[in-house]
Image 1 (cartoon, helix red, strand yellow):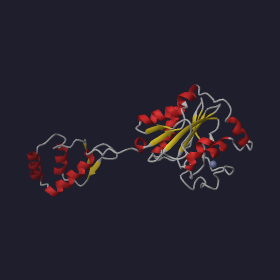
Image 2 (cartoon, rainbow, N blue to C red):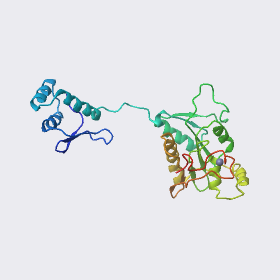
Image 3 (cartoon, rainbow, N blue to C red):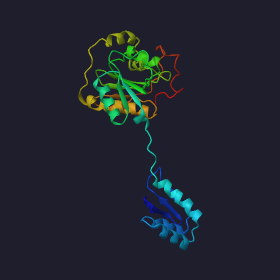
Length: 274
Ligand SMILES: [Zn+2]
């Protein structure tokens, strides 16, 4: 019998078992004999030695039983449990290097990563298929509404990543029915340009923007980080990456010109962007 965690003296009559902030136990109102006994149990002791020590110190068995159960709370490791990230399913909607790299990082963290066929997201989930907790898609200059539409219909949270000529915009994660959609995010990036709908149509037809420089180095980790934050239940948060900086995207509200306006509560009414 021994205490396999450090036993620390805090003040007279008070010991701490363990050093973990989440599991350490503080024992108070200890007699000098109880204090000495617990400190002695840093070394292995036999049951006979313990019985003799309890009798010599005048420590009643039921009192010792309560103390020992408290000590056990500090020494018993918590049962392994599935983390949200490890237990989640993430769908990759394309094979863009950013999407793939984020998927690889999430897979290494224990997430089940599935690659959606490149001929498009199935209109209806296959029978028995487990809906993903998050989908990741990367587009050039503007998020493709055709790819997003099935996600909105099936209430699949998704992380839109947009590569443009100045850098990369990552998210925030769109949760259908809650806060802004990906088109709201594009409209916000357009900064109130009323010609945006016409421009967006043409932007989707331009050659894809290649990833380069420091942006290419940092962006995969930021995409994986944003996805992991969603899986861990963190509020959605978007990031803007350029060769010079990585900064949080200012909170985006549901845009009044977006088709989702009126269907989703405005920011602040739900777990919208921070
Ligand atoms: Zn919208």
